[in-house]
Amino acid sequence: MKAIVQEGYGAPERVLKLGEVDRPSVGDDDVLIRVRATSVNTPDWITVAGVPYILRLQSGLRRPSTPVRGTDVAGVVEAVGRNVTDLQPGDEVFGSSWAGTLANRAGAFAEFTVAPASQLIKKPAGLTFEEAAASVMSGLTALIAMRDVGGVGPGTRVLINGASGGVGTFAVQIAKALGGEVTGVCSTRNLELVRSLGADHVIDYTEEDFTRSEQRYDVILDNVMNHPPSATARVLTPTGMLIPNSIGNTGGLFAGLPRAARAILMGRGSTDVQTVTCVVNRQNLDALATLLESGDVKVVIDKVYPLGEAANAVAHMLGHHARGKVAIAV
Image 1 (cartoon, rainbow, N blue to C red):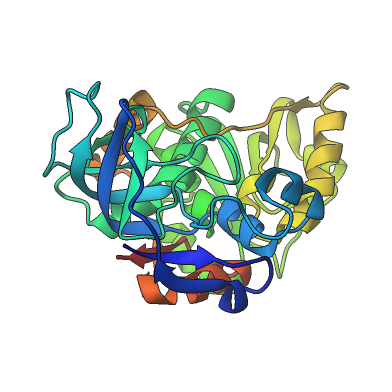
Image 2: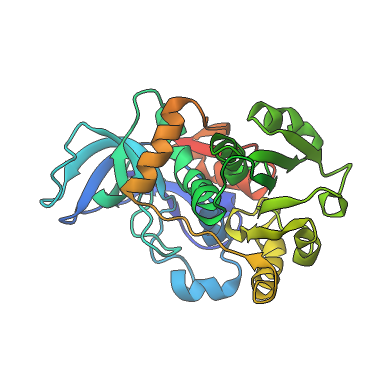
């Protein structure tokens, strides 16, 4: 089958090539999917770049041990393992092949991939394959951050830094759907986009530093980490919560990680600092699908690339200026 194969570490256009690989085998609890769409996430470009170098101890020293990137997937069931009884060939599904490591076991930048049945549900008929695929990791991260970690409800004052990125566009809409009063922070060119997603207030970071504001927030989801965490925490209410999200960082992983680490350490004191982990299971996927089907949440896609141009898709995300998600059609 055709797949985008990573031949080493470095610039996407140099190390990602269209090639032929064996079709993945199907385990007893797995589903073989004919991929129709996937999307690019932070772990994909981290593994392509191969930095920080310590990550290569996990993924492979000279090249990744699993050469095909991509975890978000939407497509058509081709075959199922013998323990899978609620999905069958021909079903349209979406979910994740994420296996808990950066070197995921079967990448989605390919014509076929394998995913655990427990990480797939049937695709809502009203969603395109591209929309479904682009919703998984970013949508679930935002859902868990707002619903579970932040406990957002009616009247909760929420600030989302990096509101126009993949996680941010979902977080604005989900926080609104939960009843929050939402402030989105983004650049000038994205102000109208963030307003259109339902933000009650929008801050242009090129004109205003939200950390110097007199406003106070109950929950801050920081996808950018472009301010010292102590400055960001200053605009929390006395019982407010800071959620540093370095994995969704739109400003560059290596700018965000040190500040995310400092934020976590700061959480050992008087500031409530909580992290968010993307948990892919059917319960969370069902909740996300309900939001998408209701129209309360829509998927913002900056651009869709064909499979053969996956290197350009990864490079697009590496530029850290994508509005919403970058998708790949197969």
